[in-house]
Image (cartoon, rainbow, N blue to C red; front, side, top):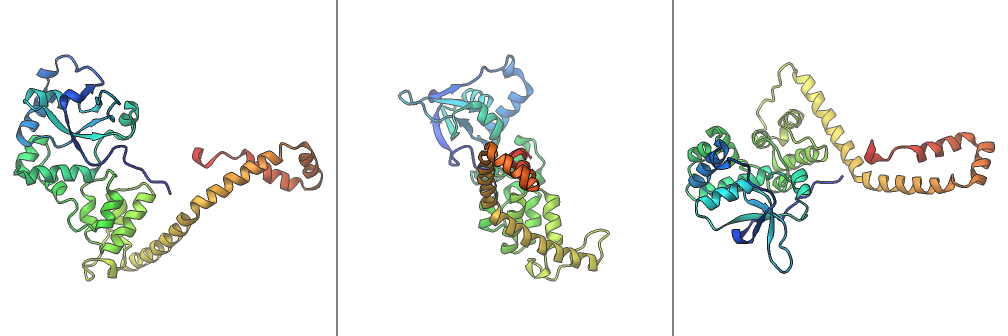
Length: 294
């Protein structure tokens, strides 16, 4: 299965503002807007949580095109800053950044907030500056508590709700990894799916093995049946995942071969006269839409 990759180098680099080239003009009246005042207040109170995003340095000049964070840059300059941490995009095209990597992953955001807390910023102050409720900030701060390293690695460049972590914490590390692998592979990293996987998890794979799993409207027998079916489904999924790449390659090669074969009029004539069923099957494979378009 293909996986998403980060569009930028994960470790921020401190870059002087004199080396940044804005890619668009500031909107008129920005300094008097409510949004700008909120950003100024946040930066003054807790510092920069989300780094600016820039393109790689141009050869010779060493200048970086600013891809994201124009308002933050203006606010930082107003506050007297001369440099800031920046994420360097791997692709210099600004449209690629805007379409594919327009915000930090959830785990990167967690580390940014934790750094602010480590610098002495209180959760209450963070919540006020970022206009989030204190409970939500606490969830972001404690996002990875009780989550095993391999599960964190799988989620490192993904976006998901902070409410996912409490569900994963109820699982033992091995089961955490299994569930996260399924969520990533199916591109369904949601709390609802995690809760379904939790409900279908055998008791011996729960942190609290004696805890009774209760799902509204589901009996104990139905729960046991769901566990068995989920275990079977996971096994089938893993088998399909292992052979998927090779199967697609084989199909592409077969389709290419058959396309050339059916371009031969003599072959078409022979098959139509002697084995029309096989000709129909071959034609169906050639005419089928590629897997990417289905």
